[in-house]
Amino acid sequence: MKFTTISWAIHTFNPWWGCVKVSPACANCYAASLSKRVGHKVWGKKAKRRLLTENNWKDPVRWNKEAEARGQRARVFCASMADVFEDHPDVIEERRRLWKLIEATPWLDWLLLTKRPENIMTMVPWGDEFPDNVWIGVTAENQDCADLRIPILLDVPAKVSFLSCEPLLGPIDLNPFISEGDDPGIHWVIAGGESGGNSRPTSPNLFTDLRDQCAANDVAFHFKQWGNWAPIELLPKPPRTKVVIDGFTMGRADKEVTGRILDGQIWDEVPEARATTLTH
Ligand code: SF4
Image 1 (spheres, helix red, strand yellow):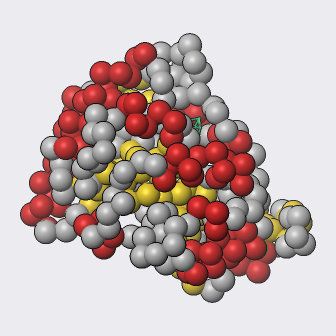
Image 2 (cartoon, protein in one colour):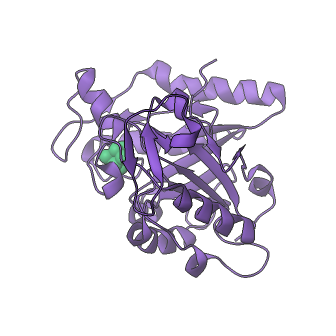
């Protein structure tokens, strides 16, 4: 069975490879670097996208059967090597195929994360009736991106709406977007630091501030990783260091060393129960 190493999903599915950088979070896009490293020129507006094999498309069908046999739903992150809502002529048919696959795999919860939420409602075939197994997320790496993308996300009638604040590049105030009443509108925040050669350190204060906002508003919070920079006290040897804007000294180390402990614990909350209970 293929399991993803991403802590917030069990599987990763890529309908194609390739994209265009559109946001500060894209600056060190690992998918662009990986594609280049393995010889695929699929980044940029004019580049062809890499379409994948029939076997790739069969994986989710198998995962769905396995989840049904276990009696336990499985989350699928789609996509790690592309943006599902990118407007590129090569992927129109693949995207149609993806919607059918999602409908045919009700034991899988599909996590569709995008930096292009303005395309969601014109690209999905579901109108106001999204399948229960579609979770829609937007990247919000700083307040500007949050202000731009969250209002669009909140108008999408998915059962679960989430934010990916990774790499978190600045403070984010969620309060303007949280609805009053039983349903906060945003159901899940996944936060993390950046990894890779040019990664940028994030102050722990930005993460704990997001966590506190989530706790105050009944929003699930998941701390995915420090990435390649963590507070120096979490690291075993004196590494290369950088002082971030609010005075924290961050050390550079491998992701396996920096880990996922924030403020003394692992934050692994997932809005699983909400998938079948919430309505917008
Ligand atoms: S949208 Fe995602 S996949 Fe596309 S360039 Fe940005 S980070 Fe990479």
